[in-house]
Figure 1: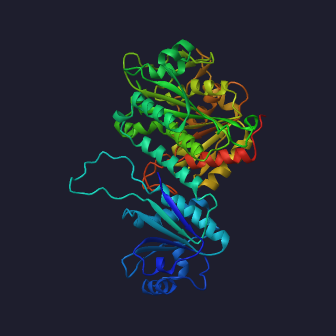
Figure 2: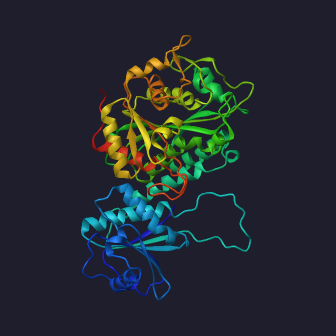
Figure 3: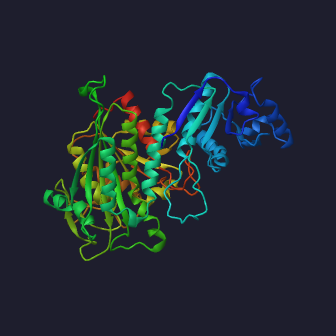
Length: 501
């Protein structure tokens, strides 16, 4: 995503009156005394029988004499970031639907109001500007619509030129673009090829642990899932981003963070086969790994002063002669034995060995992203994602990061007495229960037993990875949820590092 930002602290009357431009005008709660286009707005409000305050609920469309299209809205800075993102997304949609090559954003009000409005509007415009990959046939007579190339911002000049927001938008786009790819175009083999290309492009170190290597290492939890596919192309992929060694930040003071992502390229449910209704869209079960890739890209583009180790658990959950089955007992990388209760609980199996590998790197903090449990969707729906942590302080940081990013999360318990439900008569631990109650909590308790050492750990169950019609800033059904939240979480850790308890 290469959008050029042109900034100006002053307003151009031409942009708001005789312009042919596509423009979004963001107003404060109290109408300013004088501003370009005010008379046209008041005439349009009178014709629609609207009060100025109603622009906080519904944006108003105004066409200029020269053929320009404008959307006017009032943005209340007392509302939450999620509410502002949602309002801006809906206001921008008619403008972006016309695929303009350039977009003007005008912000009015106090300095604080203009700064907040400009930052939010630029991000929402950028994150919705690009089309997601599609395999729909195009008419040979239909021209490809232009992409948004330039955003003109009037009324506020951002010191970094909105570079961090554009990087976040590009990371979100990468996550969504990978997630929507059909399963025949993103098998583990093809996914690993794409990851190698990204690693080469961004200068990340890369190590791949394929099934033979993992089998030799004793990673039986991961192998149990990967062995069901032909070919055995599953792998745990380790990526490493390190800050520029020429930066002013001493290497000894750079925080070391592990990001873990579930990358199930297609989930049939295995021998416990999903019905068609629940197998639909299971190519999106690799979304957690795509979130990690989006975070790594955004961190690279903004030169984030952290070492990030990305660990991607890439596999498919297929049915076949070698696929694992109920009542199998497998031995994980850390030596714990697992009794298989349900083959559709494959995500926690591949993550178990991946978390062990990640924790052996002794990170100062570890965070995993996974479309893990249906019970989290039952608990929250698809508007929030759930977080569970092994330290209460991490939940406070996570809730704050969810609020500030506009990607909302809700915290769930992590009490040890839940472990009783995972007691097994034939192995060290059950993979899950067949009751389904509190499975999102039991999954987190299961995963925690494979983390070596006392690493602070946050688990993100991505129940908001898909929502029909979009969510918050993002207008597509696949939301890319986790990139904005993850960046906000990393920034919170920079400001106040996590300590081991």
